[in-house]
Length: 275
Image (tube, rainbow, N blue to C red; front, side, top):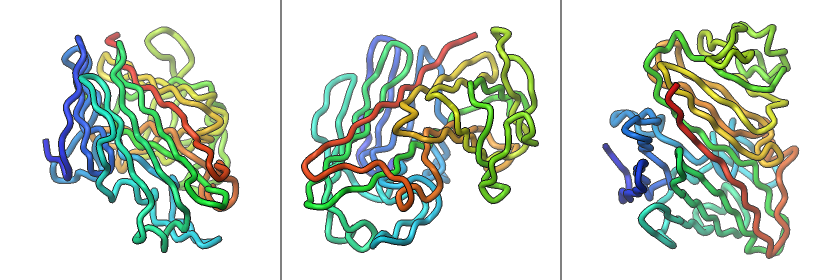
């Protein structure tokens, strides 16, 4: 498996993972012999779990901020701050070359910890400056799927923003990208159709995806991640992205604000169950 930085291997009794220090990206997560993540050596940027910080989504320009798509964390080498057999903490601090994009002083931490059924990711941003620090976080997991025509998502959400329709709010039942069905437990769910770029609004911080006898669950804080995005480039991909995400250009309009000297943290958990 190709890495752009140093590969760090984590292991517990039933789970293994590989973390790339470049971008602090998880590239592999194997649970009881089953690989959860999609990875393409020829397209590393669209593989694994990219960290979209300090801003998720489309380019943002304003208030001295000049950020490209999904921020810049994925473009820098991180330092290893702490490492054990089943967890690692990586760090990135503001650098002069970042100031033209993001004119703030910060120190960020990305921690991966293996759990009983997957992994927990903790994002941290400390404000090292003397002015308010805006953050609009996102995480972009590429989950491997064995049958692109039979991806079932279960969510409490009823509506969302469709980025293929100018970010218009479209109720889930009216979206062409989701067909009403039930999951393996008989709960109301949706089959993914086509190539969605759909951002669930009332998601309550939990979503599961079933495909090929496996259920992947993503849990996160809806106060930190104001959207959950389902995306894939085409309907033929060997992956689907289930992304704890943020409002479009939220770093300009409605960011999380970290006061000078304070630190903000949030968790995302990924788990795998065979069904």
